[in-house]
Length: 162
Image 1: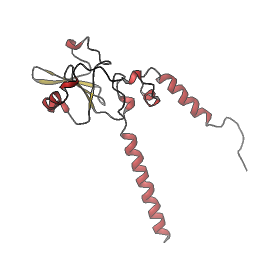
Image 2 (image 1 turned 60 degrees about the vertical axis):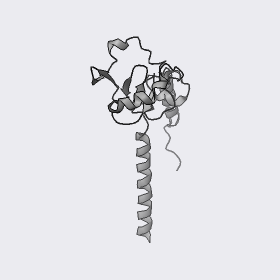
Image 3 (image 1 turned 135 degrees about the horizontal axis):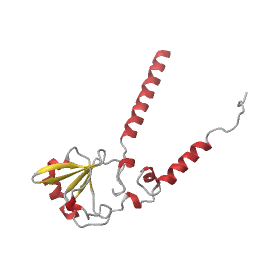
């Protein structure tokens, strides 16, 4: 009976640990650009219908079509030099290599061209976005986290309760 109880506890702890790992890997708010839209805890790609470009959040790379080929770059090409990422509409696409299905996305989201009604992460006052290093409140958030952690530590030299 004791072995069964130990086995049951081990299984429960194991499943709890796996759930915690899965949850922590499922969020990437801190990796999203400050111009990304609020409301998404996890993003693989943004599709920008105004310029028909994709942005890979984990890799920080743009994918754009040039002469019938999809090019990957860490910055937008010069033809989009004046494009305002903060005020353009972004569609979240959580699918590998969505540019391979570009015709589908272009048709599906063509009505989003010219829309400017998304709040970028940079302008959000929701504290969950402060973890993003590009958010204007990030440094204050880091100080607050450090302060909170320091408050929990004992500053005395006592030996505790005996």
